[in-house]
Length: 262
Image (cartoon, rainbow, N blue to C red; front, side, top):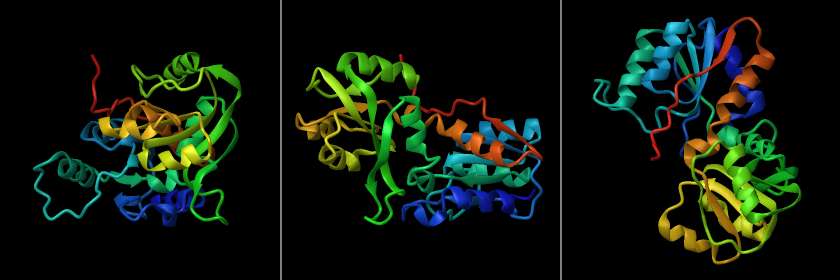
């Protein structure tokens, strides 16, 4: 199997045309004709992850976040992005990103993975791209099998998503059942979650004043960016392992979360 085979497969799962205009998903570094010796899946392709791939003999890193968002004007190793690219090129490591294209698909997408962790039912895209494309778009919404006390749900969310803390707005109702989700920075979907009458909107990266936008209509639960997307690492590995058996597919052992909690 070569890198192009993996890219072709990913195109059937999360086509690149579904990525947002600002994004840079797809092959970022590497030769499409290189034979795949092994893969490492991660959230962020840091220097530590590239070094991990080198040490275990893998030559393809599949990340959720692209290491390059904007064009590079120099490659001198002056920052972590340049150092990652240099290290990958020197060691013939290909880097692939599956970012907003994987966010924007329903089946085998980032948000479905979160919904499955919470055992939600009756899932649908929160904001479809078009009225015709109901299986692609932003976020996801579903229901708990039965209403749950809000305080119990917050504990359930914390345990299910392996988070150390949750920032949340005022508890409006004693019970919740309808849950809207957007992994990563999903504040742009708040009005859609309200319109769909969700009880809770789970996402990340909310700023102080933005919490007021809940306006007593919904409870926002900010669980952290890395935390909301961490199971994407498993999702990517599962997708690769299900399709390819000629090379080893591994999950990174490196925690790339830049945020620490005390």
